[in-house]
Length: 118
Image (cartoon, rainbow, N blue to C red):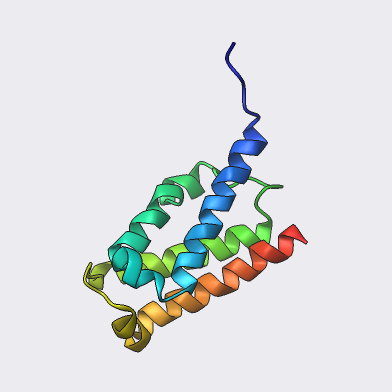
């Protein structure tokens, strides 16, 4: 017998993966493990322009503030894509204004998501 998983459960799982992606951006040391491109690729596994357009991040699983925060991180990441190098190290990221902006934006979004859980 096939088990049917409720859509809310699937959305919560996606939300959890997105929170992991935010954690990767917020923690600069993740670059040494996955590389800069690896961190961005993880993000694209769960967040895309198409996802925003098709409402893949619905309320109540995603709050209105959470969706705005996701959009801010995604836009910052898109801005960064033009200069990403797979060889980016944590040391280089700590000196890179755009990566630091991405990390700070992700950390703020992560707080919004965690506060929504309280």
